[in-house]
Every structure is written in structure tokens, then in C-alpha cells.
Length: 423
Image (cartoon, rainbow, N blue to C red; front, side, top):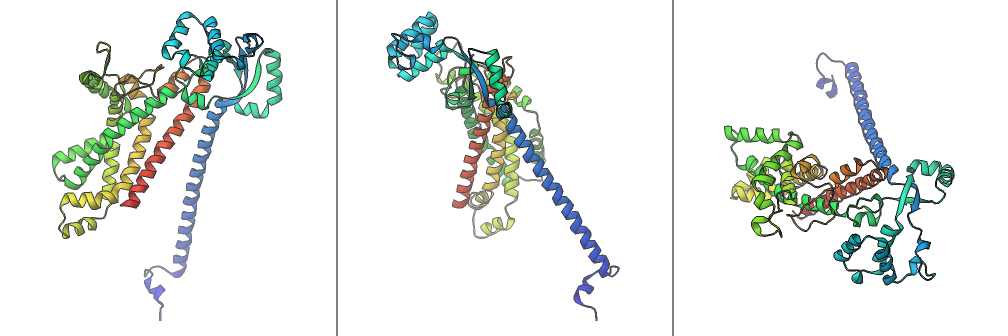
């Protein structure tokens, strides 16, 4: 009498064939598992090399040479760091041009500045410490003695310091022509403004379109099939095309609205134009809108059909079913797709260049109708400069951009998880 296992085998197969086939499948599975593990390891190594390459330019030993030594600015044998704010203001007035001193006085009167603010201005504009030469982090770690010997021979008046281009001052200082005092505050604020408008515009519109196409639209309708096909195609359109579209619609056709002139939100209507934060945010919103729609549709498709049928069976309307049952179940997938779309938008450069983002802005954006710059454009502008110090601060700005991106993504994940637990 044959046992149950033998009866379940095909008539043409023997027990030995079954065992051999099983071993072959196990070997095949092990090979693919190894391939996946190697792929993951390669990705981690590449990411580590990328971060190391960036850090290599942000940190390291540098030779600092002052235009005027702080000891030469002492008054009545009182060292610079102990001088009264009035004396520090006098030093600025004596060493800066009348126009520059007047500009600082106009921005914020010296009588209202703290002593530390005036002292920092003296260091930046009078002492003027400049980086004459900098070594990479790897050289600073493994060639320390050689660096000090080389610096002593070539720069006898200089001082070797281990510096970091990424610090609190770099994040809180606006753009400047001098790399040692340039910062990314304006670019950070511009990026946050643009991304906020992008999310406000694209998220509700994208989710609403996905709900209609998935829950209400007749999939057999020719018009709806054409709409779906175009959405899928738009997700693969190059970003520069969206920049041209934004230039034609938001910057030119809707200039009165995007410039704020229609709302009386500009001081000088003759100089107002549509190259503002609002135009940039709407352009990036169009860019990520197809991605949000497609991801939201896939999340809605993943909700079991039995959930809808149960709600209909209890007498719920279609909208009640969607709002109270389908949408909460699909929300984690929708938020995941939105996070990926925002990650793409925050690193875009080409559309914003076409729309009119500035490469050099020293004032902070005050609203959606302000001129602006963003971190990717700021990084590009610094990398294109011939001075090596600008490439160092560009690397520091890359780290700021990565931190900003991870922070926004982490916030979106926390919001998604919180809504998931609540619903």
C-alpha cells in the first residue's frame, strides 16, 4: 500500500526525482538570496563613499591668514576682545568704506546691536580671516605632521586650524560673496516655502484625482482610459519640460496673481513679476502630481473589495464608504507615495532655473510672492565658482540638504504612523 506522500507525487516522478528537484530549488533560492544581499551591501558601500566624499571637503586642517591682526586693533592697550561696543563701532567706521558702513547702519542701527554682533562684524570685515589653503579630512587624519610642516614653510604668518564649514553660523547666515562668511539661511527658507506650497497644492489634488479615477470613474469609458494613460505618461516627462510649462502658465500667463500684484501684496508694481516662490511651488506641484496620483491609485487598489461590499451592504453611500473605510485603509500607502514625490521635488533644480530662481539672494523670503533661491541651486552656483573654498561650502550645503530631506521625510512618516494608529 502506497503512503499518502507517494500518492501526491505525479505518476511520472519518483521519490528521488522529487528530492533532487527540491534540492535544486533550495540552491536556486540561496543563490538569489546571496545576490540580493550583495546588492544591498553594494548600496550601503556606495552610500558610505558618497558621505565620506562630502565630509572630506567639509572638515579638515586649513591655514588661516588675517588681513589685519587682532593685536593691531587694540585701543589704549585694551585687546580687541575686551573693547566696548562704541570702540568696536569706531573700528568699523574707520576701516570700512562710507557706503558699506551706512548699509550696515541702515540694516540695523549699531546702537541696537549687541556687543557680540558688532564684534563678529569686526572679525568678518576688518580682521578678515581667510582660508589660504585647506586639506581634506583624509589628509588631515593621516598626514598631520606633514601638513603642519608644509604650512609653516609656505605660510609663516598663518595659523593652522582644524575647521568645519558646517556649523551653526553657516546655517543662520545669508549668502555672501566671501566663502568664509557665506551661509545658507536664505536658501533653506526658500526651500521650505517652495516645498510647503508644493505639498498644499499637489497632495489634495492628487489624492482627489486618484479617488475619482479609482472609485467613481467608469474604467470602460474611453475618456477615462485616455486620462489614465496621460497620467502614466506624465510621470515620465523630464522635469525641464515642467519648468517650461510653469514659465508659460504661472510666470507669464498668471503673472498678476503669482507676483502678488493682483492682491496689492507688492510695494513696487513696476518691478513685480511672476518669478516668485508661488510660481516655483506650483511648478513643482505639477511635477509630482502624476506620481502622487499613481501611488494613491495603487494604495486604493490594495484595499480589499470585500470592505467596500460590506459597507454597501450596511447601507452606506459610496462617499461614506470611501471616506470612512477605503481612504483610512489606503492612507499609509498614499503617504508613502507622497513622501517619495516630495523627496524628488526638494532636489529638483532644472524647473526652478527656468521659472526664475535666483542664484544670489541675500534677503530672506517673506511670503509666497518673494524672490527666492533654494538649496540645490545654491549648491550648483557655489560649485561653478573657481575658488576652492566655494566647493567646500557647497559640500556643507549638501549635508544641510540631506538633513532637511531626512527631516521632512521623518515628519511625514510620523504623521502617517499617527493617522494609521488613530484610524
